[in-house]
Image (tube, rainbow, N blue to C red; front, side, top):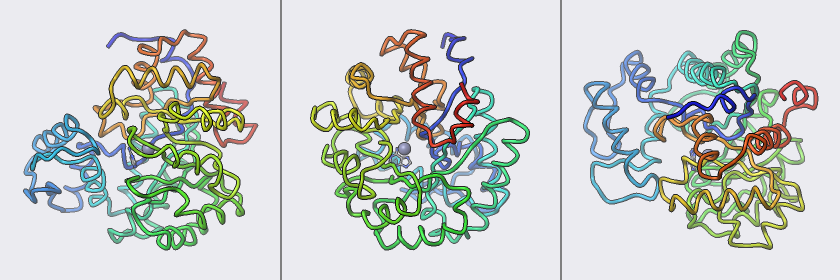
Amino acid sequence: QTRDPFIERIPKVELHIHIEGTLTPELKWEFAQRNAMPLKHPRTGTVFSSLAELQDSHDTMKASNGDRMDNAEETMSFFEAYYGGFLVLKTKRDYFDLAMHYFERAARMNVRYCEVFFDPQGHTRTGVTWEIMMGGFREAQEKAWKELKVESTWIMCFLRDESPESAMEHYVAALEYRHMIVGIGLDSNEDQRPPVLFEEVFARARADGFCITAHCDVGKTYPVEHIRQTVSDLGRTGADRIDHGLNVVDDPAVMNLIREKGLGMTICPWSYIRHQPFDEVFERIRILFDAGIKIAIGSDDPAFMEDTWIHENLLIARKYCKFTDGEILKLAKDAVDMSWASDEVKRDIL
Ligand code: ADE
Ligand code: ZN
């Protein structure tokens, strides 16, 4: 890959990254070893006996269709690989190391500020306590700020394939850590799970002062109606941002609404090209940008997408949307603008 000094140098804000999506096979292996946990293939149950074997299975998953599963027995779906990773996270040190690993990477890419997703339900269901999870995250966050000058906050996502009751229980439990959490999101498998199912918990979060966002259509086949609900209904007044949602270009009315409300969209190109025609992805990003909709380029799950971080996502967006330096700068400024940082922090970034 050719170097792009402009993209390297530009101060970055990352608004779409799942901390669990930064769990590389190397980290997974390290945590499994030190916690004396056998690592099993989630589909076949075979125990991985070396890091190389684990990396190999990860590569097979990457080459597959991502979350749009094909039928190969040995091929993991994205969600199997992703949630399989949660099993190796046991101690506060694991959570600290996972987050610190990301913050160090972020610092090297000149990320100055990030809002990082985490999925608490995926951790409590493996028996991890809030104190272990949030304690590890908090220590890493403090160290990242002190030593790397990377400022960060967290977005708590509900798993939309779990029940609204579970979301509410987790919301209430998280209030003890609310000083660490800027916003509430919605992720996981979108099939048959429209955002309004979670209306009650989002309305409560809105009333309590959290910002809100939701994943929409990571890959084209989910109804634009999910985007409309996110824009107009979620939290009663509609969300503050939309995560993904490229298929909104099929619905000019909803696209207009996004523009009129000034909502930003977080866009992660490497996530889409696994299961959507390549050219169409970049055409759609360009359409949104040219329509004057604010876009923040993000990375989603770098460890599961061929090691593509915000830097690589900016590079591919630049190349295939033909963004000029001026347009890259506009993207960077829009990301700052779309962020939920204080005005003071925003001023310091760009
Ligand atoms: N959670 C983490 N990564 C995700 C993705 N790509 N789509 C939906 N939910 C997710
Ligand atoms: Zn995501």
